[in-house]
Length: 397
Image (cartoon, rainbow, N blue to C red; front, side, top):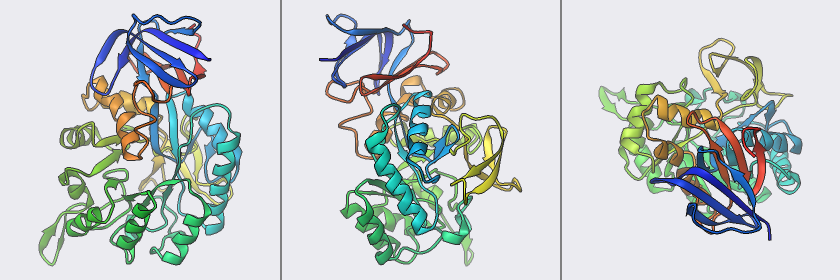
């Protein structure tokens, strides 16, 4: 039996802090989490040195990092990114695609399936997130306009036949066939998410009733209030904030959303309905300068400056270069969220949104031993994935 004890730290649950806490894991599963009073013999031990002991971070929307992009067409890109994510406290992530050719998408899915079998270290991949190609052209952002289209059953049924690994799929529900598409995804246990959409409030409400219960990167690539024949209509933004049960995700990199919007979203939706996502591309964790969003062979050139990726004409952001630790840090420093809520938005809330709450997202007995240790500035010292140390600095022993 493989046993691990992490002690001498402050445990963070979704609701409270436990001083002088410890976590005991056996064979990759948490067996105890609480005060450091539980006897534990024959354990490997990690002294947290007074730092925070948290559930591992879960990033449900990311395109890559550390020089890797999931559209590169290699299993090595998935494995390399998985190792880099662990350096920033991520223990689980959803590799996310971009609008592309069918052949490129099929190859990406094939590489994901291979990587699931071959990656031995780093963060885990519980499923895929397909972003597109069913989007509104005028809300496409950095998505390649050549591949944007309406949902056709013959096409998406073919994609669904390629894999059982899709967990969520982002689309614009107002497109012809969009509602049928949402119902089909729900029937397959896949989360339909509103993204790159020009819908107005009545369309969003109908979409919610047809399975679109989540909104991709709130405020980015979506409609706001506007006039139609002199009458004002709310857009996706207002609907997402107004529909109480709808969950949202935000890119809290400090660039996509300023502090005042982070505060507004947190005030209205709260920690239980808001997930932090990086939406990161390959340049995350890399020096600033020129980079590519999407695959190396056919991706788009972008410029990374001021802590964010931009299109070459600087007219629009083109994905973020944020890491999960930065997201949590920003919610504390920019939005004024207490550390328990900031961590909740990066752990239990995303776990609930993608349906893995019974396995991940909290320091609770029976859940996967996915744990991160970090200091008061959310600098990661150690990341444990499934009871195995995936990253550790020399500050711990």
